[in-house]
Amino acid sequence: MLQASRLFHTAPTVDYLFAVMPAITANGIELYYERRGRGPRLLFFNGSGATLETSAPLIWSFADRFDVVAHDQRGLGRTAIPPGPYRMADYAADAAALLEHLGWATCRVIGVSFGGMVAQEFAVTWPARLERLALMCTSPGGVGGASYPLHELAERSPDERAAIGMRILDTRFTAEWLLAHPADRMLVEMMAARNNAPKSDEQRRGESEQLAARRRHDVCERLAAIACPTLVACGRYDGIAPLANGEWIASHIRGAELRVYEGGHAFFIQDSTALPEIAAFLADLGPRAAGPLTPR
Image (cartoon, rainbow, N blue to C red):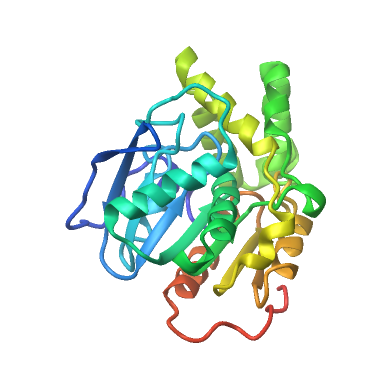
């Protein structure tokens, strides 16, 4: 199992060449992005409340095989925090503007959690721009199933938020489980530290706007527009984006592959086979799969 500290709090060990870290004006806001690595072009969409800084090791773990570009989504990190409300279409349009700036007509796309929702919105809006698509621990919304309503946690006490956060991160997690599984305990502690980091009122507003857009996410009737090879990767014990939601996505994208990993919402940390398999899928230059894989 990969250590949580490696993916969320330490710098990447690879000496990346040609790192680019500028900002552009897109859709009326300043959008901060970074680009690293060499290989096939890969657009990375980050999760709820996550920034390039907090998720750097996860994002740049792909840079040894891909030319990776990732941005702080509107309202987060070093990107501007414009007035709300934000729409899922706005997040997708920001990414499209970034690709225009880079001169990328097409690319591979990966989205994690909320980023998987934006990746779906991007894919159904501009299907011809995607070469391959990987969706991790995410949901389609609507009749296909929504992810856990994180916006409701704001009304809870800190202790309640911590208890619920632990339970939905991985449905196996109890005090007894964490006592017997120190790596999972480290994961919970790392996620709690990230969620409890000091933030300004403006930063909290940006996060709140993101969660408001998230609650309205629904691509169910449009998923059939996705025509590229697609991998849907899920954690068996995910309480935020339940396995059933990923199964629904995979069953509504023609030829999509479904992989189920041993872990929860952060299965890519808990199951050491996950990231190598996802990277291999994204790197594949072969024809699209004829049908879904049998869930493991």
